[in-house]
Length: 507
Image 1 (cartoon, rainbow, N blue to C red):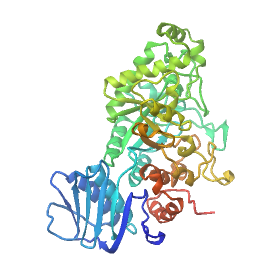
Image 2: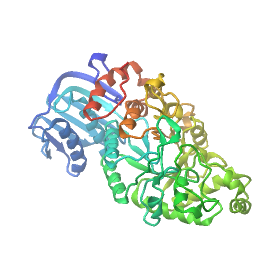
Image 3: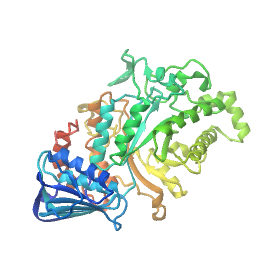
Image 4: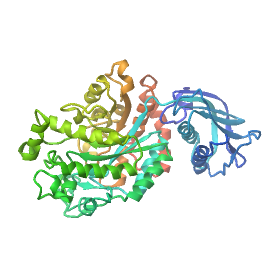
């Protein structure tokens, strides 16, 4: 990789990089040379570099001219991988697919010495991601964020080669997606009476709060993400974290009345009634609308932190347990998730949920997202089922990032420094023959204590940059001192993009 002084500030670090003499100068005469049929992919690459340099960079099929950026598809390159060669006479970028070309263009963008400058050092790169699932999550249930901020988040994800955006759309404290068949979800469920103060979770501020995204906005975001090779994973929480839905349609709860959109953080006893068939009519109807908006393979159903208090006292739930031969309420939750998994599978989709869906037995086609450490993901992979690793030990970006908590904005607790994020290995503890069942990993941004977009960015970056490297680059190729050196060159790039990051090099 060369010495620290001449190592380019690339994040994530490529698998292989060799410096070579000279530089390539992008000029007003530079063309993006592309094979017929690959114009869409080439346009996306050219757009990235146009924005960085201000140069026209028109597309052409003529390979005879010099000073070109030559893009081509190659059969000897793996999915999402690319080969990049920068020479004084031109640049060649080869990939097996449009995603690989796009990631190569992002690397070229990072090689530029600054926005509006166009000299690129000569080098050869061979690069490929270590993991298929490179995810970042955002909770919009506790606090709601603008559509413009979501687009900015996707842009930053693309810069760092993330490819999954987990959009947490429903919570006790707010339902955030328009569902046309159930209008009260946003008429009622998107709004709470007040919100805890950031520094005091027990004191409410007395101000109504809420918001939601229309289906048109959601479809627009799906397309925006797709153009950046990011798949949006929507999450509709069940059977718990459902109080906003129950405030909208009280008949779906075990009590049947008396619900309000929850104001305080924490876990609510108010969950969907597992003994009421109308609940499944509702959820299937909602999921049909969700699937019509989000074309990706996975639908996240939550499944976490579901108290059993109401089920234990509910005649309908107890009758369901007797009819189905279920031994306890944990098995009732498993039955609930299995029923939803079967519904999604009939439409060619796959259910993914937090690791509590293991309790009482895992649905056969379900994927586990392991958050309470890695144990749930290890158990799923060892049983031959897919897992995404998202342990709070390495991936919870709502934790404090400095030991001196008093110097930081209020956070939920915990401590997750930059170095520990970089140490994350989704395959740790997994037997080699089960590695194919680990799809990758994900960072989570829970927003109870993040009321503004600036605070979300402060908590997310640059820890998400370290996570991007952990998901792209093999552990043997990672070094924290080297990462810090590259990060010093990367942070000005984030500053130019208007990111309110936490500076790890400041006192």
